[in-house]
Amino acid sequence: MKKVILGAFVAILGLQTSMFARAATEVQFWHAFTGRLGELVAEQVDTFNASQSDYKIVAHHKGNYSETLNAGIAAFRAKEQPHILMVFEVGTATMMGAKGAIEPIHKVMKMAGAEFDQSKYIGSVKGYYTAPDGNMLSLPFNSSTPVLWVNRDMLQKAGINPDTDMSTWDQVGAVLDDLKAAGVDCPLTTAWQSWIHLENFSAYHNTPFATKANGFGGTDTELAFNGPAQVAHIDAMGKWAREGKFFYAGRRNEGGANFRGGECALFTESSAGYAGIKKEAQFNFEVRPLPYWKALVSEPQNTIIGGASLWIMAGHDSKEYAGVAAFMNFLSSPEIQAKWHQDTGYLPITAEAGDLTRQQGFYKANPGTDIAVIQMTAKQPTDNSKGLRLGSFDQIRGIIDEELEAVWAGDKTAQAAMDSAVKRGNVLLRRFERASN
Image 1 (cartoon, one colour):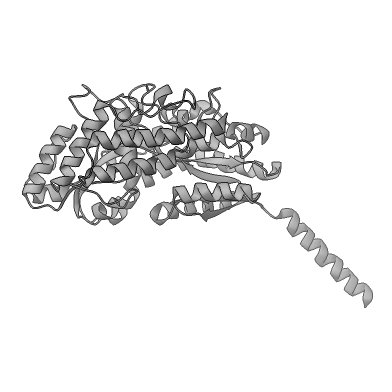
Image 2 (cartoon, rainbow, N blue to C red):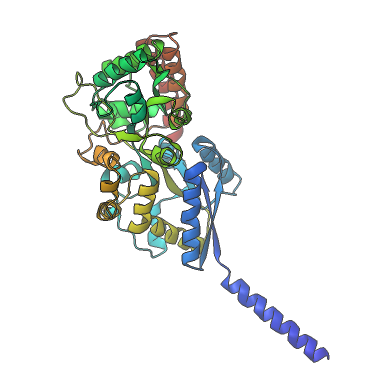
């Protein structure tokens, strides 16, 4: 009897040992997505987990972009960091300066023996996350650029031809006049006001946002967005705000709900607004290029990216990094990237994914969905338009938001507000410079 029990125990123990040996290696992934984007991330994770049995990606939502970055920093200090952390683009300099906290993606891929051809990634996208030596530091997972969203039904109802050219801000201003005259309460709203109306405005008009190639040339950069071009644009928007033609809803994407709900006619927002607008809008909508001022440039330069990249945190073992590498390659594959691009409006991060999307007929069936790609890639980026790499930029954006709100409320002139934002922001840049050297 004892031999039977012992034999059964040994068999169970052997079965458990076999099960443990086959257990998938877990990889923790912290991100900032909710709503439709959160659903699509969950779909990607589930697809990867179902495609193999060696690794299991465990995704956790950690709040908005700022909250996710702060959670990652706090976790690293407590030695409880995830393997993969989503960080929005303005946190790039912070991550680069976090000595010992990250492992560059090119290094992890090589260590894992994974295929990693950096030439496949779109230059205007990968450049933002590339070190001076040409090696990529993080994976540009969700990269977007701002565009103009149009509620065609609202224009038609106001007696405006929905096909009216709105390539320039002058033309947009004329449409806003007509919308206001027709009794529209929200002719124009925006999301991410600093990103669109200062950062991208500067790049689109090929004028510096900061010195030292917008920070790419060193941490001793200084802000420069209080120049004539930026001040003129903010002044025009301030006038529209006081006249009831520009409705300010908030610092992030609060205006998205107003546009998707059919309250606003025009909306400057990320190309990635496509996912939510397509799901929720009960009206005919259209995407147009971001407008430019004809008085400043004969034609626009390129816009710059927003969104976030995936950073690999230090302090994990080689087996876990092999799982990270496998997941990164999965996310970069043409099929997954093409679907992500088509579902969300984010840019395809590889040329192969863009080509596949075109071959599948998506752009033809959904006119305008290629505008963001064209806007980003039609011209070779300049020092003024390849992006921003500024320390403490999340906090600097907070300063900019505060000063812009003073302009919208009529409490400050555009020049005074931008001068103040530059002065206050430079204090943070000098502090970051000292900490980095």
